[in-house]
Image (cartoon, rainbow, N blue to C red; front, side):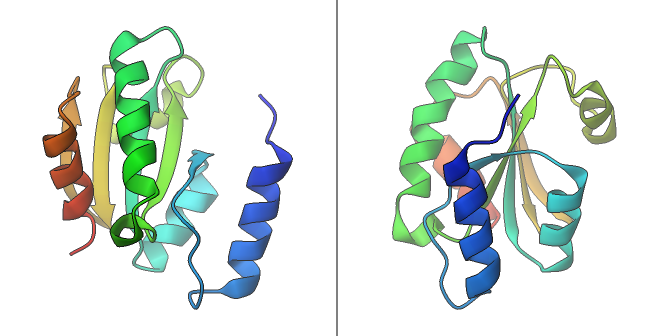
Length: 131
């Protein structure tokens, strides 16, 4: 799986800008380093366990993308775990199903859901990462 130039450029710009300017939240592939750095910085994080073949995941993605475009959620870091290839990450988070969403504020897990496609409850889960 390759990283798009947009993701690399957005990451570089985000690092250069520090916490002064936060672009709209975008999805990025989960890495342990990115997750640990975000936790250490006390960031709001949503871990999205995704599979290309999963219809529930496909319905969650536009909801999460829409939230990421809203100013209130611009500071939320969304890290996507590939259900089929990142089995070590699944074990770390004790995840057994794709379509799992986990919200963190720094090192504290604020909530999780599995198989949820309700925009209101997904919004509430992401909102929980802000406080």
